[in-house]
Image 1 (cartoon, rainbow, N blue to C red):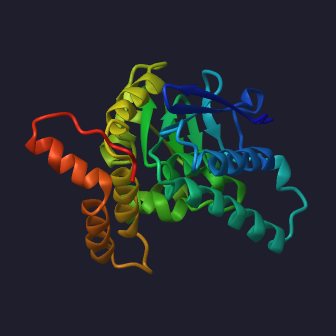
Image 2 (cartoon, helix red, strand yellow):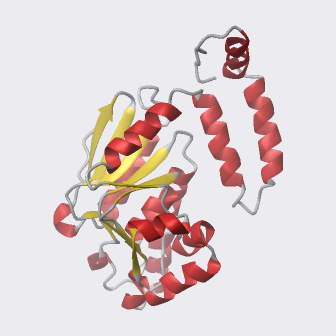
Image 3 (spheres, rainbow, N blue to C red):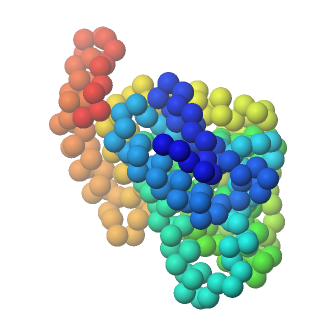
Length: 259
C-alpha cells in the first residue's frame, strides 16, 4: 500500500513504521493519522507482520507535536472532533494485539509524545527529549496526554510537566518510568528489534491476551482480575497453551500457531 506520510519496512516480521515529514520535524497532521489508521487496519490480520516499531525519519525528531497550521480557525466543535479522532487512533495502537514499540530518536513532544505513550513501551535515544508543551500555546493536550502521562509517571510529576511545558531528557524519562531503555543515539531501532525478536518467539495468541489484560488495569469499565482469569482460561485451552505445556514436559521447543 502507498502511504503519503509514513514509510514502512518489514524486517523479518517486524514492521518498522517511520513518520516521514522531516522538514516539519515529523509533526502529526491529518494525513499522518489517515496513514496510521490504514496501516494498523491492514496488518491486524496480516500474519507476515508480528510486531511494529514506530519511529521518525531524520536525526532530530520522533514527532515534534501536532501540525499547528491545522489549528487556525478551528471552532470548539472542530477542536473536540480533532481530539477525539486522535484519541481513537492512539487507542487502536494501545490496544493492538501485536506488540508496538516507540523507538524515539529525538524530540517527542505534544502529540508526538502522546503517540509514543500509546505504544506498549518506549526505547529512547540518549538524545531524545520528552514533553507536553501545549500550555505554551494556550492549549491542553488533545490525544490522551493527561491520562497516559499521569498513568506512566504519577499525578504530581505529570501535572508539573503539563503545567510548565518543560521538556525532560531520556535519562530522566527512564527514571520516571516513561521510558524502558535508553541507548546510544542511532541504536534505538536496533534495540527495539532485539526486544521484539524475543517477544515474537512466544505465542502470538498469548501475547495478544497479555496485552489485553494489562490494558484492563487502566480501563475503568473493566475488572482487570476478571479479564486476567478469563484470558488465562482462553490461553490454557488454546492450541498454543497446550503445545507450550507439552513442549516443556518433553524438553523441546514449542511450535506455536497463534491460536
